[in-house]
Length: 86
Image (cartoon, rainbow, N blue to C red; front, side, top):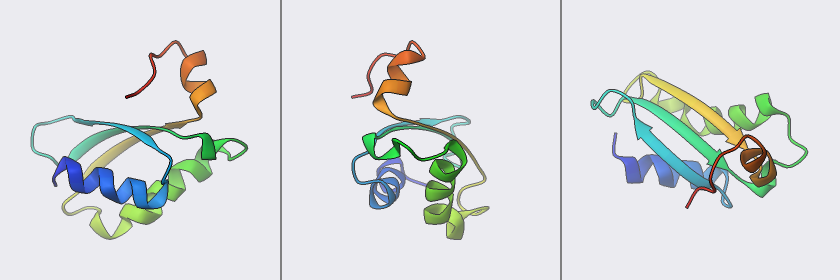
């Protein structure tokens, strides 16, 4: 699973997303996905994650074995003490 491909899939689901991807095992099958998007404003956390999961469901469990999704608005992201994602 290539990082650029994964980023492109997420952007298809959430076009205004700023994304940070971390390969957790080095095998490119376990990913931490951090997404910040203004379009998440007013959307419940579970629905934010479902948006991503619906886009990736055909790739779970192969080639994606595990994903950890954190989906926030820009305000939520900063309020949690994080630096802005670039």
